[in-house]
Structure formats: C-alpha cells, structure tokens
Image (cartoon, rainbow, N blue to C red; front, side, top):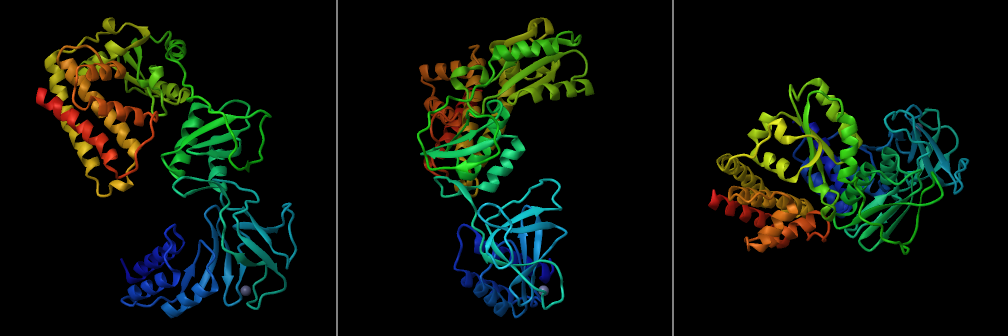
Length: 491
Ligand SMILES: [Zn+2]
C-alpha cells in the first residue's frame, strides 16, 4: 500500500469515526490522525464527504494536515450532488448527477435567501430511482455569480443531516425513514405507519392483500437486523386500500396478530400434485420439514420436498422445475434426487420414510428402503465430527459479543436434534420428527435434552433470546456439543 493510499484510508477511517455511533471528541480524533500522518508524506488536499462538518473541525483538519480542505455534498442515494467552492462555504450543484431543490413545509420550492429542506432527485442512479428525496439536510440558495467564475446554482448547507427516524430499537439504534422506504419499495409493501410497543414493532401497511410470506420474512429480518434481535416484528394490513403516504406516530394500543400463517402441508401437497402430475420420471415426492408441525412454526420453518426421479436429477429440466417450484412458496426447498442417492444418506432416508407427507407415488416402490444400523452409525460418526467442528468454532469465536444468540440457539437446536436422532435410530428406535425425538429424549432422561428443548423454543422465537456473549448464549452451543459427545460415546 502506498503512503498516499494509507493516508486516504486513515482519513476515511477517522472521519467515519467522527460520525459513528461511538463518536469520539472530534478534535481528539483529528489530533490522533495527525500523529499517525506525521510518519507519512503530507497530503496535498483533504476532501471531506458524507456529512456536513462544522467550520471548526474543518479548520482543525486543515491545520493538522497543513493542506487545503474541501468538501463534497454527497448522498449514498445519489453520489456527489455538489462540490464546495473554495473559501466561500457554498456548494456548486453537480447538475449532471442530481436535481436539487430547497423546499418549504408544503414541499414547494423556495427562492434564494429562504432556508428550507434540501430535496434531491438523483439523475444518475438508475438502480434506485428517487424523486424529491429529503435526506434531512437544511440549505439555502445563494443568489448571484460566484467569484470563481463557475455558473449554475449555488447552495449553502445550514445544518448537519438529521436522519428522520421512524422508530428506535431497544439497542438505541434507529430505523430511518430512508431505510424503510427502500425496503418497502423493494418488497412492494405499502407501509403507512410504524408502531413500537415494548419489544414489538408493528408495520401497518395498506395494500390489496396481506403481506406474503416472502415480504414478511424479509421485512422482519431487515428490521430486526437494524433494531436488534430481541424485537418481534409484525406486519398488519389496515383497511383503506393502497396508499403511498407514510406516517409514524407514538405507540398506540395494537392487537397482537397471530404467528404468520404458512401454507399447510396439505395445501402444499395439493399444489405440488398439480405441478408434478404427468411427470413420467417422477417415482415419488414427499414433504418433510419443521413447517409441517403447526406447534413449532417460526420464521425459520422450512419445508423440504423430495422428488425421487429416474434419470439425471441435475438436468436442466429438473433444475428449472425446482427453481419454479421454490419461487412459489418462500420456505419451500425442492430436492430432486434418485433412490440410490437417498440410500447413500441414511438419516435422510429415515426421515423421508418416517416423517413423510406423501405428495405422489410411493417411496418403497421408488426403491427407498430403511438403512442398516451399520450405515446409520457410519454416517453418524462422520456427521458428529463435522458438527463438533462447527459448534466449537462458533463457541470459541474471537468476539462472542458480536454473534447472534438467536442463531446460536437455532444452530444448537438443529445439531442437538440430529445427535438425538442418530442415537435413537442406531438403537433401533424409529423416530425422527423433532417433536417425538425431543419428547422421547426428555422422557428417557437424556442429558441436556431440556437444554436442547430450550434452544428450540428460543430458535423458533417462542422464547426471547439471551444477550450476546452471555453464559446463557454459550449454553445453547455447549448443550448441543454435549449431545454430540454423548452420541460419540455410543458410536
Ligand atoms: Zn465558486
């Protein structure tokens, strides 16, 4: 790395820090940067971008680096919207990349000399068209020609950006209007009001129909990733038809909508039968997966459809068929396979034969048979090795406070459950469904069965997750590891 690029990244880093959530004393950060840069060749120019910096900090930066400082008016949504004119504290608008307005409360454009909100219409961002986007900056048009000789509109920025916050999470982080607007646009969801009530965030939307599984899953994951994993996010269709207006109000009493409804296994089977009927190569198709158990439905629920075919399951035909089917139901995963391949994966064969919800054909006639104990034990040993590795790596990750306890719980429940499955199957007990395996483990006093049960409840979001980096979060992984160890002892 050249000294110039080192310097660039140092400056970017330090200025990023100035505006980050854990903002240090600005002049302190600049001094620290200056000490670093003393070891490198001095810069010729420092360009500030991203946020409006006060004249005091700018003077300090210029003094520290001994070079001129200039600024760009930039937005993530449009790129560079203006260039600062040296020494005038005004910006020349980059008319090729953005159309800028200064608007009043009613959205009407204001003349020069009247302060208002800056509205930006990016002209070069084709990927995400925005019209009259108000990023939260205040500005004022400056009349008359500029001393530098450049023509075109000139703007003075009046205040640092104040992000318009829709809702604040328990972790103190904000969901900004722009985040929500982008999300809703991508998902085609007409959210009109966001209400936070305790640990629950309700997104009220006006659309033709209730949010689909995909919309719900994505919007929930996105909002939780911004505001914190402890939150429950729900969507609620409100009467009144589609609307483009979005408002946010103080928390109000809201009824608790139920757990998002997934299609029932019978609905999926009926639909899949119509799709697969007349397919000559299909010997059998069955549904398995946690979504088939109504008591355990969560946003992690999945449905597997295994289609046993003769011929090449990876052919272009089956690839496109599987893709088309997956597209129809958010949580569906269509596996196309051959009977011989199922025979090579004993646990899958057991699960197909014992948990199956038949769609078409017959597994036995397709050639899927119950595996031998030897085959199960051999696969179990290989599986246990991998499981131990994954759980251990997770448990000993460099910074456990940065891992997601909900995901720990979910991982622990999957691995713990499979360890129990292998153990019971190798003992000749033919149970594989999550509910019966956990029930049997608890009844028969399997160590850590209760812990895995708890991991399941948390992983399914039926119970709140612990804080990241706490012993409770580690407990999930430790319990799963113990289950794997316990299986090892048997194998
Ligand atoms: Zn100028």
